[in-house]
Amino acid sequence: MSTESTASVSTHILDTSVGRPAASVAVSLSARSGARELWVVLGRSATDADGRCRDLPALPAGTTHVRLDFETEAYFHSHSHSHSQNQNPSQRQSQKQAEAQQDAPAPRDSGAFFPEVAITFAVTPGEHYHVPLLLNPFGYSVYRGS
Image (cartoon, rainbow, N blue to C red; front, side, top):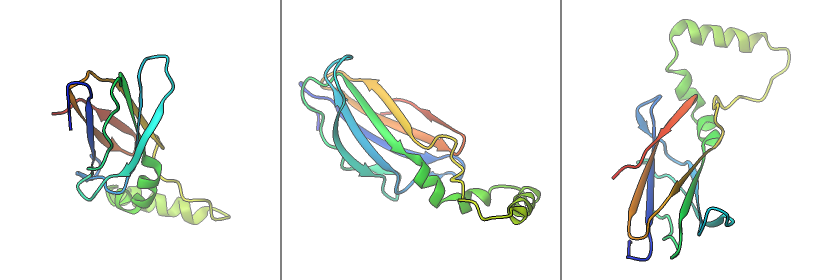
């Protein structure tokens, strides 16, 4: 919903390490009305099976900056098995041997180098901003989509 006085935002996430949408990633949307103003959280959501947030709230009039916060650590923790399947057999065997050699069980690492991703961008009233996140355990890329 875009009017002349507000901007709108949408997003989706693609897990490039498996070539599929990233479902169930928590996302929060914050806004501010100037570079020196405080951030105001407008709402929280989670990506659906298609990796999309379909219920992000509208931006208030006067918004100049927007921040999307993606909680990626929980996603990678819950999908660590599928990411280990992308290793070749010798990598999986080495990983199993290393895990077996540990004296005491250690907490399972999520495999995410970036436990969260915060994307901040400027907006202009009346414009729509689609901001896709391309994600993998050791990197990410973001761009203004259409």
